[in-house]
Length: 156
Length: 73
Picture 1 (cartoon, each protein chain N blue to C red):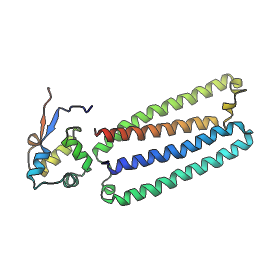
Picture 2: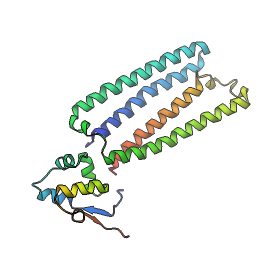
Picture 3: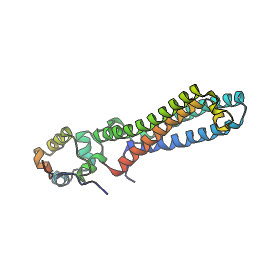
Picture 4: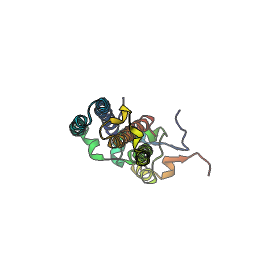
């Protein structure tokens, strides 16, 4: 498959984000069954491990990619890359805004009806508001990467 | 289905007459990736005016000799 460095880099970011944060959220959902103080410690430890893993994977593999495509790496973004970035960021922004509004809605509901979450195990996910925001950000990033790949494959 | 752009070009032909200049060579001369040149050649992507001028300059041609507008005003 004929791919530019930017497209390869986007594929790498998409795969690492989906796999690492997929694993993270899968484990976070599992914490809903645990006592609150215990689940909070595990969630914090897991989030630190996840962020470290993503940073390490990105640094290592993006560096290897840049070294193996040195000439293209020094070029930076050309005008087509910038156009694709602009379009995909616009899509990602919409996803992020949906997540932010969802979080705001939850905060407002809890303000007026504090008993809203009582009796539902799914609401016992530690740092739920933060996790909804984090999930929105990750979904926005995934949609940005997916849109970029779509534009690169389509070529315009 | 690929979108039909109103701008066509003679880059492939001009590369042929420039000692079979490769897409990579042209890309390096104008500062874009080879994939961008490929998209322009296939009329899938319309370059900016600046890039269009740079490409025309590489071949020593005027803009109209390299790019043709097939649409209506």
